[in-house]
Image (cartoon, rainbow, N blue to C red; front, side, top):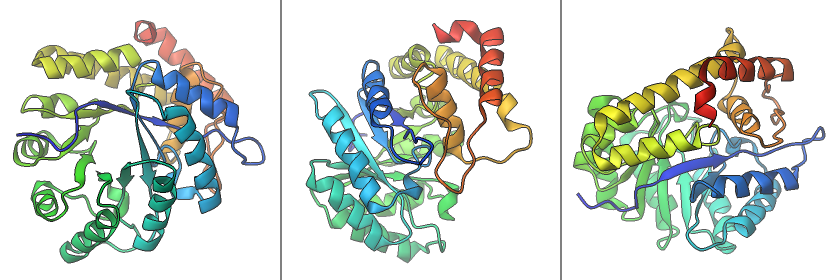
Length: 304
């Protein structure tokens, strides 16, 4: 089945804040440039990039810098939008659209779980406001509802510029159905990408791309080549190394995703502060160092 968007590895760029919660521009630019050395599909403002936390002025500032750095041949940037209402989503998209972006990642409003009729209204209103743009749905439980294959079949019939999903929690059966029954490009996580690639073209949302770039690329290429046994093995290696790295930071403490993603970026060699915007806690430096030590002691080969 021909997909509406090309297969790729998608990686997130996190946002570095100083002690006054102002953007550290040089670090942000360095992170983007480092990511582009290995990957050409980058995005900002998912949960990991604190897209839920930004006022419009700060959103515009960061989007402008992201545009400057990614406005290059063969680089495919995407801007994430997380807001509480259709109006705010459209307003933020318009701000990024006006400076040249045409691919967006949208989540459903989380305040109240959307019914079947309401989610159709949402996608029609948002995507229909920008008919020459392309949209990927960030499909996550925080919105109150996870959409499945039958939902997407309804939406793709009515919304021609919805081109993909980011769906890292899909199980093996749902991966199969999504890949074989829809025209959308599905960005699975490293762990469920092999299940999807077994049935056809799909993509990776690379949670570990910054820290394990060569393994991530190898996993993607193996899936595309039909080397499924090897792909499963690499996915398991990434999962085990990631679990080792995160273990010292877990310990029964609940943290939002971005706290861990900033650790991943910092461990890759970028001078990324672990600070999060209010009210969320980041990981302290002592814990971070324990995470790096655990990874190097058990999975040093993954860092090559």
